[in-house]
Amino acid sequence: MKHRIIPYNPRLKERAHRLRQNMTKGEIILWQKLKRKQMMGYDFDRQRPIDQFIVDFYCKALRLAIEIDGSSHDSPVAQARDHQRQVKLEALGVRFLRFRDTHVKQNTDDVCQAIRQWITQHQQDE
Image 1 (cartoon, rainbow, N blue to C red):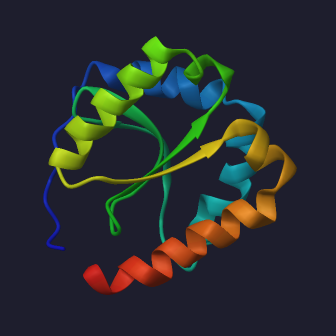
Image 2: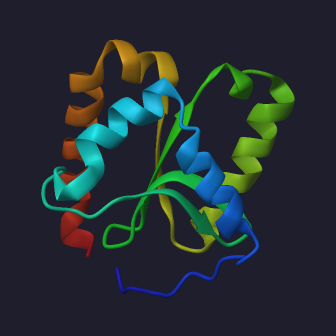
């Protein structure tokens, strides 16, 4: 997949900064596994503005967004909003992995293995 510049709303930078300062426990746990190119040598950003949205984690080289969904994502309204957001970002070429916050906290190794497996299957697309 050819690298494209994906625009973002500069007004989201301050909000992204605040989100980085107030990460959920699941986000903190996963960030410890993603930062400093620990995930198969790929560079991930946390709370990254993309278009009009902020994704939890993003790898530019893979065009991969990783979202950690807590209980605030359980309502039908929130699920519909997440779906619409994901569809818009996928139209820009962003690909997604989603995990439940509880799953990250209780099964971190399984989550990391799922990410490694996704990377192995998709890195040849790059």
